[in-house]
Length: 162
Image 1: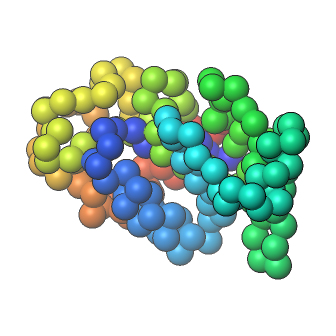
Image 2: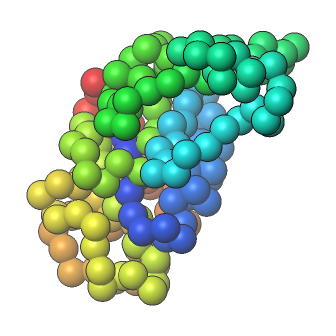
């Protein structure tokens, strides 16, 4: 499994980039999962519905299983490890892409810059493997334009595995 984290400021284009990258990797015949890290509390089950009622009753986790999807709701610690979650839930996938996690080390970490934050960075060069930027950036790292999805996929194909 290849694990790659995409980090950057909110609004930098991480989600749009990952949508395109997922499509390209799938076009290449790869299996792909995405973990979205969020600093906000969220719930996928509406208040009062069964899964929410089980969690409110104290269950540590519940699964909603439909005809074509499975949703797992499980309590985790604030510092839950995305690599461990990827290993647990996405073992056997070719790629697990993580949106977020700027403060954590990952085998491959790529920072996404947008025009408004192209001068500000969330990571140092020694913490990341590449940059995504619409504008030229002075760095010794590989820099990809957000539209260079095939080149980015080629770069990931050569990256480290966990």
